[in-house]
Length: 147
Image (tube, rainbow, N blue to C red; front, top):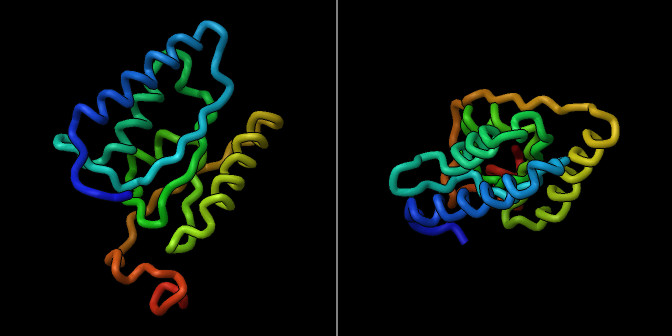
């Protein structure tokens, strides 16, 4: 569940565990990475935790070019750092997130297609001029239903 600001220790613990596991696999290779991200996590010193996670994953030996796909919450604060450090992220389109499994399947399909054919998706990032408050993002109701 979304909640308060995360401690830096939680973020560093996740990154440490990921790094250890990735480095253990590096000699034999990692074929692909799939992440389930929220997209709006902040910590005590990081306003863009997911962007930092993606950046640090890409900085690990052998992971710069590994296909990295996953999913994001509909309410993600999608940043330039996030856009430049992934191969493809699929966002949920409904709130409540009744389509989370569909988004995960779509992202897994993109990863599989990339691994089978080498075809790469392109992530485009453009800052929007509108932001909806969480209380106005139920997709069954106006204004989101119309959008």
